[in-house]
Amino acid sequence: MPEFVIAIIGAVVGIVLGFVIARYLVNSSAKKKEQEAQSIVDDAKRMADTIRREAEVEAKDEALKLKAEIETERKERQREVREAEHRVQQREESLDRRTNSLDQREHQISSMQGQVEKRQRMLEEAEEEVNKRLESVAGMTPEEAKTELLNNLKDEVAIESAQIIRDSEARTKAEADKTARSILSQAMQRIASEYTVENTVSTIQIPSDDLKGRIIGREGRNIRSFEQITGTNLIIDDTPECVTISCFDPVRREIGRVTMENLIADGRIHPARIEEMFAKAEKLVNQRVQEAGDQAAFDTGIHDMHPELVKTLGRLRYRTSYGQNVLNHSLEVAYLTGVMASELGLDPVPAKRAGLLHDIGKAIDREVEGNHAVIGADLARRFGENNAIVHAIEAHHNDVEPNSVLDVLVQAADAVSAARPGARKETLDAYIKRLEKLEEIAMSYEGVERTYAIQAGREVRVMVEPEKVDEAKTVVLAHDIASRIENELQYPGQVKVVVIRESRAIGVAK
Image 1 (spheres, rainbow, N blue to C red):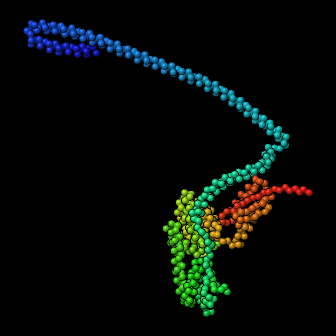
Image 2 (image 1 turned 45 degrees about the vertical axis):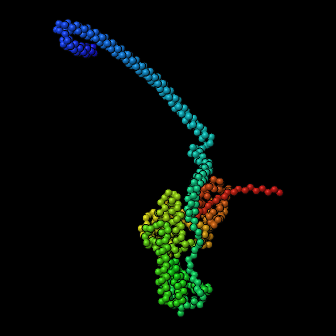
Image 3 (image 1 turned 180 degrees about the vertical axis):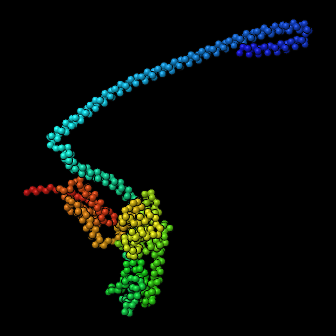
C-alpha cells in the first residue's frame, strides 16, 4: 500500500513541476528560469518527502489496526473451540454416568429375574402340594373334580347365556326396530292409499226371470253354446233376477260377464249372436288388460319392460287374492319398496320393478303348475329381466333363501300391503289351522303347560311350569319358539311369543 501511495504522489508532483517549469520558462529568462525551476524542484522534493512520510505512517497504522483485528478474531475462535471441547467433555461424562446406571439396572433385573423364577418354582411346588392335599381330602381325581365343577357350572352358564341372549336381543331389537319402524312408517305415510276389499264380479243382474228361459234356449242350446264359446260355466238357479258365471280363469270369466251383459242389453240371444258378442267382449277385455298393464308401468316409471310382461301384468286387474285386487296390491308393493329403498340410500328404480312384478305369476298360475313365486320368476327370466329382479320375485315367499337387500325389501313391502287392516280376507278354515299350528308348536316343548294364540294369531302366550323352567330358560324358550314359527309357518306381519312363568304360594286362615 505505501508504494502505491508514493507512486500517486510522484505523478502528482511531476505534473505540478511540469506545469510550473513550463510557465517559468515562458515568463522568465533562462537563468531566472533555472533558479526558479531549481527552487520549485527543491520545494517539490520536500513536499514529496513529506507526503511520502505521512503515507508511510498511515500505512503502518493501518497494518497495526488489521493485525489487532486478526488477533482479536483468533482469540474469539480459540474461546469458542475451548467451549465446544468443554461441552463435548461434559456429554462424554454424562454418557459414562448413564452407561454405569444401565449396567447397574441390568444387574438388578438379572437378580430380580432369578428371584422371580425361584418364586415361580416354589409356587408350582406349593400348587402341586395343594392339589395333592385336595385330592386326598375330596377323594377325587382331577378329571372327576373337573366333571363335578362343570356340572355345578351348568346352571350358572345357562343363566349367563340367557342373560347374554336377552341383552343382545334387546339391544339389537331396539336398534333394528327403531330404524325399521322409521323406514316403514315413512313409506306407509307416503303410500297411504285407501283399501276396499274387492271380489271378482261373477253375478249378473237380469231385468226379469222370464229372460232366464231365453238365455237357456230351446233344449238348452243357448246355454251350451255360451259355455262352449266362452269357456265358462253359466249357473241359472232359483235366485231371482240374476245368473252366475263361474270360471277359474279371471280374464275368461270377465269376458263371459261382458258377453252376457251385452246379450242381455241387445235382447237377441242365439248361438250366432253369442259368437259375435263374445268376439267383441274378448277384444274389449284384452284392450283393458293392455291398458291396465301400460298404466301400471307408467305409474311406476318403468318404460323398458317386455310387452308380454306388460300384457301379463294387466291380467292381474281381474285377479284377486283373499279379496284383494292383485294389480293394486302389486302397485302398492312397488311404491312401498321404492320408498324404503330411497330411505336406505339404494336405487329405487329396480326396487319398484321387483315390487311391481313380484306377483306376476298369479296371472298364469291357473295355466302353469307350481307356486306363483316360482312361476313369476321363470316368466320374468324368460322375458329378459335381470337376475336380481328374478331372485327377488322367487324369494318373496321364501321359496328360495333371500340373499340381498332387494329381496328383503320386497318381502317387507308385500307383508305390509297384505297385512293392512281390510286388505285381505282369510278363510275361516285357514285361519283356524294357523292358530292351531301356533299352539301346537309352542306345546311341543318340555315344561310348557298351556298355550293361547291371541290377537288373531299375532301373539302366542305360553304358560310354563315353574318347577321345570326357570327364569333363565324362559328367554331361551321364547327365542326357540319364535325361530321355529319363522321356519314352519307363513303369516302376514309378525307373531309375538310371550313366555309366562308364575309361582304362587297360597295359605288359608281358618
